[in-house]
Amino acid sequence: MAASRRILVTGMSGLIGGLAGRHLARSHEVVALNRRLVEGVTTFQADINDLAAIRPAFVGVDTVVQLAAYMGDDQYGQLSTNVAGVYNVFEASREAGVKRVIFGSSGAAVLGHARDPEFQPLLEARWQDVTEPRPMLDHLVSLRPNSVYGAVKAFGEALGRYYSDFHGISVLCIRIGPVTEEDWPSDSRNAASYCSHRDVVQMVERCVNAPDSIRFDIFYAVSNNRGRFRDIAHARDVIGYEPLDGIPNWPMNRPHRPG
Image (cartoon, rainbow, N blue to C red; front, side, top):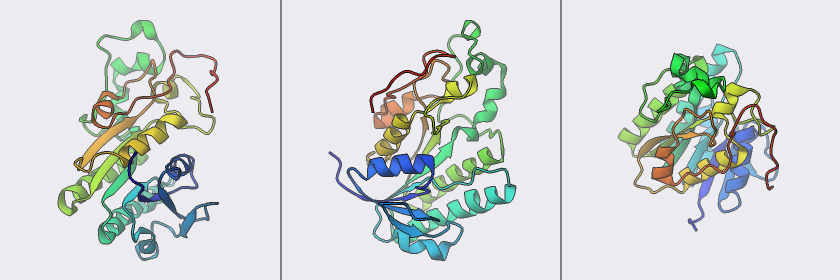
């Protein structure tokens, strides 16, 4: 059993932040940094765009799980929250002596690769047309964002690398696949990269408990889907990630899962 830590979760009122934060609270002291109150959790109410306002949330924190993000279409929102706000989180972490930051990135940082023809059968569930060995994006693939959102997530990864190399913070970046409120993909494209609720919280927990010797790394949080083209072998080898769920075919009926 890993030692209990004081963990700050940003964006805990969101879907992934709520899932991860409440799961971590079973074995750690979890506090939230959020613009609105998170029920049942000690909450520092502030916007990550305001460095001075968020500093108190980082005092005494061992690990930060950065999941606050702007998901809308306004490009100013992308730049203010997903660039300036993410910088503020890293800088406040540095100032407070935080040991590890877990950065909630996205497959969108490299999803431009999926435009290449070899990935289309996987995205369209045309199994008979899938080539072997199947195409796979690993943690070393070049950044190739498919949107401004993907580009700012790539920026966050690069910023994390800087804070790791020059300020000694362990930074683990999670390229999270589609996580839905329904805990089920909406179409074949989402079915290829789908990440279940159980698998995303497992990934965050394994990053929290990863050895201190890991100074920087990138992992894909996806379930074991038939159409999967994002590598999970690296996460399995380094931190022991083993998906509990997956989409074995598409379309298919949603199976019952234990609660």
